[in-house]
Image 1 (cartoon, rainbow, N blue to C red):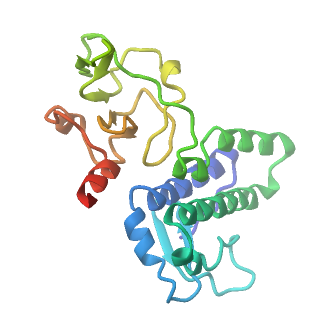
Image 2 (image 1 turned 60 degrees about the horizontal axis):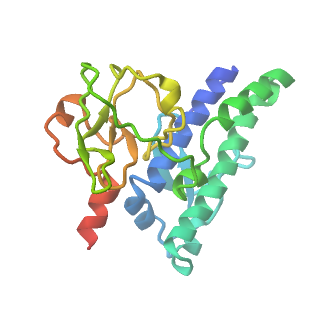
Length: 238
């Protein structure tokens, strides 16, 4: 997929989009990704594309390639490692690839532009951090009724603490966005933004962009207890 970003903003957008595809492959679509990485096949690579999609396929044939290439042969180690360890290894190599592509595009940037690009990239958690869940703790979003469209009902636990029953907030949430600055989407790893609809899992208490888990505000109104894709999958396997 052709992409030729030139400015810091364009390069960062390309980086973010490729990263979103990669994170989806290693989290939300992980079972499909795992099955595609058959050790019996030839050398396979994991690509993230500028349209936020991902692909497991053979490496580019042209030499030198149009862009830096991701790690080659990720499928060969799949069955010889613990699944979680293998996914973490793929994540580390993918982080390196994403940076190499970004700085390939940024080769003509000046010193200050390169620093700004790195600062933007560094504000996002790495793919490795998302996959291994090594990210900042998620703050409790429990709130009193503000009269906004976001409805967050609470229930009391045995120790008297309030616990969110339906964990939903969107662009009408009135609390300061800085309070949620450390919250990361459990699917794409993106930071919290007050102008987007989010929903929290009542099982693992992770938060997700509504668009990442295909939940709209209207659909959320009818959900008594939301289970994210990961928790739903775990229950199905038990």
